[in-house]
Image (cartoon, rainbow, N blue to C red; front, top):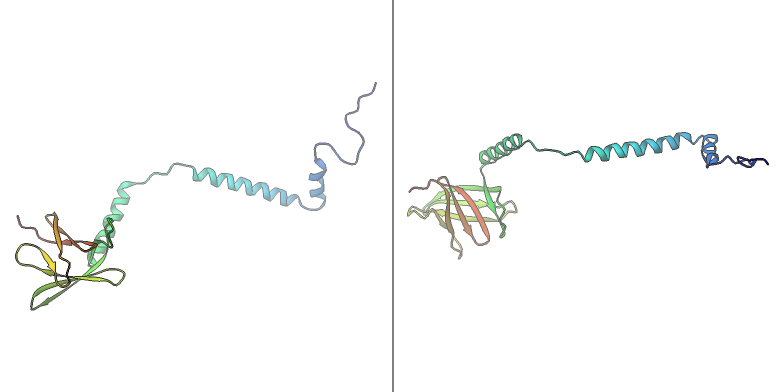
Amino acid sequence: MSTRIFEASSRPPFGLSEVEGHARRGCASTTLSTNRGWAVTLVAFLAACQERTTDTKVLAKVEAAQNDAAVEDGRIKCALAGSNAFQRVCTVDRETGERGLVLTVHHPDGGFRRLLVTKDGRGVAAADGAEPARVAIVDANEIEVALGNDTYRLPATVKQ
């Protein structure tokens, strides 16, 4: 009785002929670079899965610096077109006329509202137009003015 491990064939077992074929044709580097590509992808994937933490102190400093720069540029917080999210993107021009101090609040899209600073304790009123301004105190240094669908946070000295 004879035991044959594999039959005589020009083709080696376990698919080795495919590897040898690549090597004979000079394609071994392609297989190697494909393997490297998978390895790089795997390393990048694992690196992306690491938990990242935010340094809240650094974030607070950056936000404070941005806020200071915006204040220096004359920008105020506003929530436009019915939005509840305030952003420091509106600007204010001051003009003194026969009626008193008029603030023109400019929107980033080119729109604007004009407010008359009052001397009767209300803060501001609509300088023109049919919609009245609704004023609320935010804190000792800020008021919130709603006019139509737009809301502004203006610096103010609140007397109590």
